[in-house]
Image (cartoon, rainbow over all chains, first blue to last red):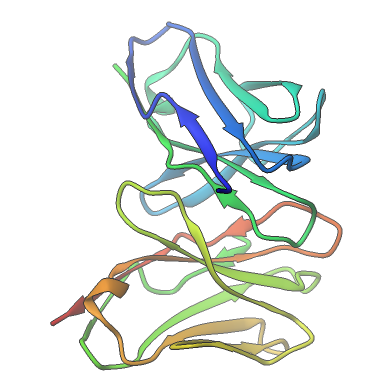
Length: 112
Length: 112
């Protein structure tokens, strides 16, 4: 069963706290992504990872960093979270370019 | 600058009607156009996709019509069902580049 798993599904953090969002996939996909979804804006790419330790900034990387030490895991880190980082974060993976992108169920992060 | 635009934030149709969701794009280099379907609380899932060498792609009740010259495309959902009620995202990318650019989504409601 092909799956992208995100943990946790819901998270509330105070402004200034560090946040770690975890993502795993069981499809041995090389490419993984972090998107955020906000009402009226669709999905915006934060970071893309082409393989272990091969990460590139997306359209909105400011305030975020990522870590990929194993092909199946991709983490999103917010150092000192801000209220404008309240959003739904989606992790995704794909085998290669122009193939289906599989999404996880998302993590709803609220920064208060 | 929004690379992919969806003209309607929301659309309501009656059960049995054909729902038409429109999308346009800026970058003429885009050659792959998937549509993703998202239900509340879930991640987006690939519904149907078309490549720019084609002007039509059909899969059951779902059809994409593509106009390369005008840089727009539309998703037609024939015989709409209440179970089709979801948010639909148009996306685009180009060959050998993994990144999908998403539109802001159209929330479709099918009334029984």
